[in-house]
Length: 322
View (cartoon, helix red, strand yellow):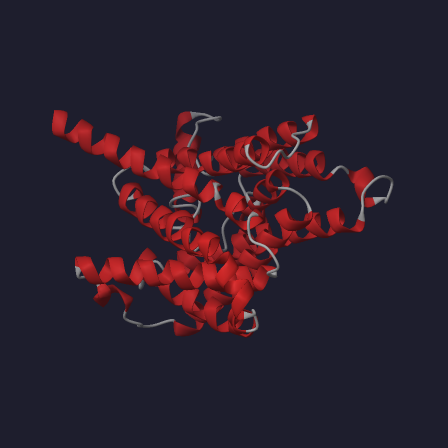
C-alpha cells in the first residue's frame, strides 16, 4: 500500500512540475532579443525534439515513432499545432501572458461547439452551462470596449485575435488527436507533428543571423530542453498513472503558474477582469473535463459516458506545446 501511495505521489509531482515548467515558457521568450516569433519557435522545437529523441534512444523506445495509417491526419495535426504555437506566442507578445494562456484554454469551448458537426456528439445541458461560463470569461478578459477602439492600442487587439485563434486551433488539435489515438501514442503524435512544424518554420529559423542566434542560445537551449522537452516527458510519465479527471484539474496549474510568473518575474499587471475571466474560463473547462454530477445520478452517468468520448484527458498529451 505504501509503495502504491509513493508511486502516486511521484506521478502527481511529475505532472505538477511539468505544468509549472510549461508555465515558465513566457519568461524564457521575453528574454530573447532580436528574433521573430517563428524563429524562436523553430529553435525551441529543434532543441526540444533533439532532447526527446535522445531520451527515447536511451530508454529504447524509438520504435514508437513508426508511421502507420492516417498519415494525412498526422500532417493536419502538425499544421494545427504550428498555428497554435505561432498564434499563442504572438498573443503574449502583443498582449500579456495572462491573456494569452487563458484564451488558449478556451479550446474546450470550440470542441463543444464543433463536436456535433464533426464528432456527431450531442451538446448536453452541462456542456451548455460550461460553455456559457467560458464565453463569459472571454468577454471579461477581452473587454468589449477594447474592440470599439476606446482605449486599446492596435497591438493589444492583435494579441486578443491571436489568442482566440490559438484556442480554436488547439480545440481542432484535440479532436484530431482523439481520432489518431487508436493508431499513434502521444509520443508519436508529438514527434511527427513537431517535425511538420519544424519544416514549416525552417525558412524563419535559417534566416536568423549567426550573431543573433549565438547571443540567444543561452535562453533558447533551456527553453527547448527544460521548459519544453523535460516538461513534456514529466507530464507524459506522470499522467498515465493518475485518473483522467485528476490530470484535468492539475492541468489548470499551467495557466495559474503562467499568470504568476508573468506578475512576479516580468512585472505584468493583473487586472480584476482578468482574474474574474480566469475563474469563469477555468471553471467552465473543469466542468467540460469532469463527470461532476450536476444532475441526477443516472443522467450524470450518461453525461459522463459522452464526456469520456470527447475528452479522455480534457487536453491531449501536449504535442501542441512542444
